[in-house]
Length: 625
Image 1 (cartoon, rainbow, N blue to C red):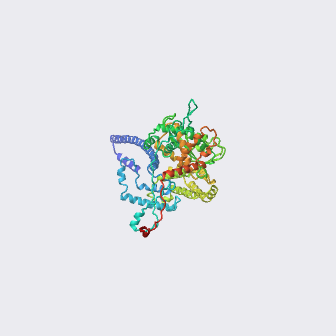
Image 2 (spheres, rainbow, N blue to C red):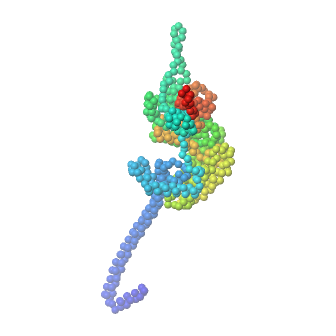
């Protein structure tokens, strides 16, 4: 087609003069030149557009990557916020059905009770729509639980705990009026058939009194030389402190978590003032002179146990020689909750959370110790230094919590029950629940029977759990970071988590120690910190004595009182032969507590009356005669 156009152009030039041909050539040359200029301009513009396109493309790719990073961060922070909101305002529970309830409860907004508009929110919480939503959620929870069976090992609904009055003294009163009954029903026309009983708990207000003891000052000889008596075994010389008063103060401080400044205000109710400085000085003195010896003896006894549990929590000391705001720690050691015999709970104050505490506490161990703990790095670090003498056993509570955190960040309300059942987070929690169901049925068995039943009933559940964990593909992009972390934790701890199967004295989890950590957390909530390291060391001594007494079903008040009465008798004894009698499980202490409570009953419960018989009808003829 181009050739035809060229041929036509040649024919058009035939017959043209040279001047006309030159004019045509100049015309087309100018047109070509203008087109060439426009072409170069277009080429420059195209090059600039290509550069801009590449810049825009690179910027788009960068924004895509940034958006992906932000999306992942948003998912992570949303999960963290969900867990934190649940920790702050949600129920503190580890029951599987309650966990499912929390996850499905996202249809009802959770509010901060400290928010300024909390009153308005509170007024709207009982609307018909919220009630209907709650009803649907409860029905949903029940239907999901039926998919797995009863996940918490309870076939019936939990019964409300009744008030236990068995440990209180009893005053029995038969309330009746013979004359009133005769007047109302007629003499001889009634009799006692049954008795209707009504119980109330009465309280005698606590009082303090002054106990004045006089000893004679003897005048000897004709020169009347005065001999003053020696006050032996005084708890604190030249002080009004008594074992009963100090036991009450220490119990309120270490068990009721009442700071001394609150006790200072409380003492005014008893008719006298007692400053916090005086109480603090008394406690420090008796702990240093008497109670610390018992504390060290308990720690030494605990080190001889083959089955132990351990955990740690932070603590704040104001006058710390380290940098401001440095955290200290309180370590909790206790005997295994499955051991029969005396239980020991020991608290230790340390400035660090490192393995040095374990090295010091277990220095010179000569026997194998099975230690139930979490996956904190100090434990495997120390265990590796013992040459196999320290064997770590895992905690299923810590393992389960990670799957629960992965479960809490999910939105399950838009999923069907079958889809929920297929979620790996739900399946992992359900499999762990089955392990607990099988294990809880064996708690009352002796160690040898416990081991045999574990091999038969619990081992298959554990194998099923780890088979499922190994089947999860961590490279799947649909697996959340929380779930990936939970699976990795279970895989890393598999050896420790299986260790309990080899011995009936090893517990399934470290829950007993975490319950022993709770007093520290409660005290921290009320008192916030210790002012000095000496105060922290005094605190761990009292915690040890009180919690050990509780673990052996001893009354902490009478136990502290018993120690304060007995320890001054051994102030200058260098040996430890008397220590076994000072333990809360000793026969001597148990007799002491029984006698104290028996004497208390005589004074605390006023005497009642005896059960009457129906009176006989009086003979009127005999009366007239």
